[in-house]
Amino acid sequence: MYFQPTPSPDKSKIESIFYHCFNRKLDKTGSYGLVDWLNIQKFNPTQAQADLQDKLKVKKYVKSICPDLKTAEVLWEGNYIVNAWNSLPRTFMLKANHGKDFNLLIDKDKVGISTAQKAINKWLETDFGAITEERSYSLIKPKAFAEEYLGKLDDYKFWTFHGEPGFLQLSVEGEWTGTHFNDRRIECYDPYTGERLPQRIFYKMADNPEHKINIPEKMLDYTKKLASDLDFVRMDYYMVNNEIYFGEFTLLPACGYLPISPLTLETTWANVVNKRMTVQQALKIVKYYKFNHPELEQDFHISEEEIRNFIKV
Image 1: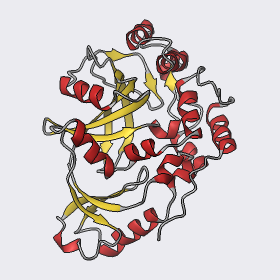
Image 2: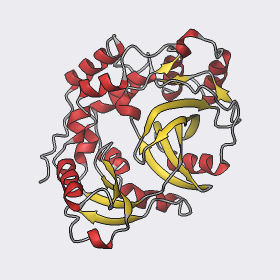
Image 3: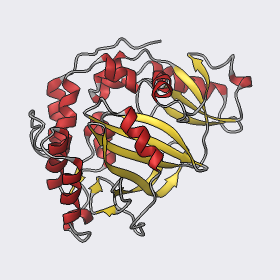
């Protein structure tokens, strides 16, 4: 049932996908843009990366660092769900631990055992790392699991550099389907002041955004502890009924294909990850821009669907 892992990256494929997405060659120094730096991280996958990306193993790691940080409860794990089906609640999340988008909201009134098992079989046979060239995923032993369904939630995503939150990505509009947002709108906020930032991450910005928000101080504390040894990570959390839940360590947001606009800010944040600039210096540069900057209104030249189709995700 398991795929045969191929942990060696195809560097020519990485460069080809990058060129297709950004209409330019990948800067292998990682200095031109943050997307460049993120993509060259694919060249050298490690077990340490895999351990953070393993959606089961990482829960234990998080608890060892931040024991009071909640994680969604694992209800079952394995390869065949039939024997556990009757003991599981009516509604739960079915997931696999070794990739992105391996999740299915199960409502037993609508989804049966056979559908659930077919999803599991497909996931366990898929080498996600080989599709996106995030080969650290190929180092994870695949396993399916059932997780408690948290219901309606707000997701907070902190783009973090050398243990310091740089900016907050917040999904503010769109329909939550239980697994993802439809027509997602994203805003960026200063993680220290809560001020809205004139910065766009691929998706459209909100029609009616909040210009200042309250960011839980506890999230910043968790982020600094969990990301202290990492050059870059997007630390993801969920807010459910005013309680903070750990989401995941995202080492390569959207597989490394989420450009920041205005595009000059790509270089700004690359300077932060390369330690040529501090987070606070970068935030000052971001705030120099105006919300009517034309690049904040323009859509990226390629859609999310086109990127997914090209990568075959």
